[in-house]
Length: 489
Image (cartoon, rainbow, N blue to C red; front, side, top):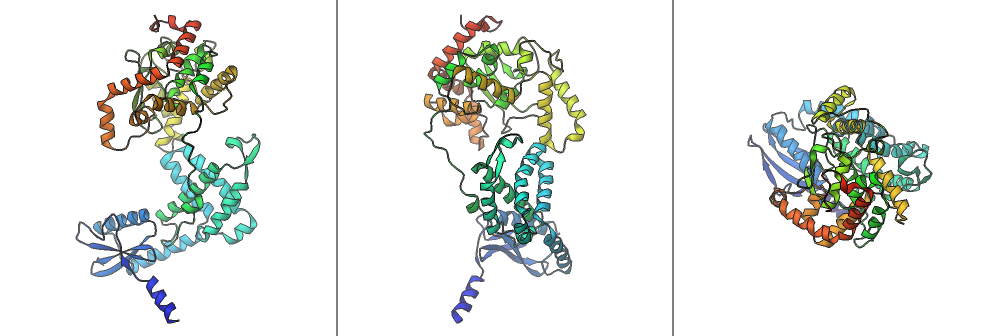
């Protein structure tokens, strides 16, 4: 019995701890806050206005650091009240009353509303769709009895949810009419990670008590699957060469450039004519329309292209001065005309501004502007990523290529070839539009644009058979005779 009491006292003992490498943190007003730990939970202790205080900061190191920053800010702003203050007690009592009543469904709705405001409609819809699977689980009678409120959620419940998800059948890619099949491991992971963010949101917003521990732990989610580094290339050079030889004019000028360049389909679809540097043979991908449209990582970068692609791009532009470089097939071949006409350079900016003004009521946040801009490009004749994917599938079937991988895998195939040819990792990250970390990397890239072109020359020589096939096909289809495209003479 005495040993049990001693063990209990030992587990409740506070020990010296640190946050951000410091045990003591001092505010601008001179108040010192000391960090301690009890049962794995970080606690901040100190004196404020002549009264001692102790604040629970949480178990997770990141959450504890965030809570400490809020505490220090409140002390400096003179808005902090110690836990024993009568006003603080009344406020906490009211908050705890509202905390106890919130359900997981209600908490999910509040989280989706927050995502909608900060990240836009598309992201909010995706998260909402994932959380629908959680709602289906919670709707089961045996689960509803045990888990009525958010604070009732436990690790056992999350483990049971994971089992439910692994056996749940869903339509492929979310299409309602597709055959149903068991949810993929990635789908299960997406649902669990979204639910984890819901609980984290509840804690940050004070909708869950400070002592609540997020039941969706990294151990339950599991490690992210890692691909085999020596896996086969999805579309090796021989397959791409075979497809080039079966391409028509439209496919050669709109699909084949991605056989050589590591650009995403959405970046190609959004490329504008003023962003083309024909003389230096460079695509300049960037944030455009005053920040309303952007690349995936919101980075701006320039991608050199070989002379063999020049006639293809000239054919896509077709003498126009503004608008999207790559157009839908019906507009490229002239069988139809786009709804929005672009007469002069700069018209596209005016069209986008007018489109955004009309759609102002449907914009809930900054992230909602990009889909509206892309619709304006489509109305101006621009190609969609779906059409790019369909044309690639047609080309793949015509060439008899066995791989069934999506056209997005062209990107990894190109990057693999770039590695084999000796293109450095940092140059690959830059050309792939990845967000570079650290000012030193950015400085290095800006200072060595010529070096990028030199490294790309090595890659083009490595892919010489592919470029020769493109040149040969362009000559067969008459694209090399276009004005500005006589590069094969």
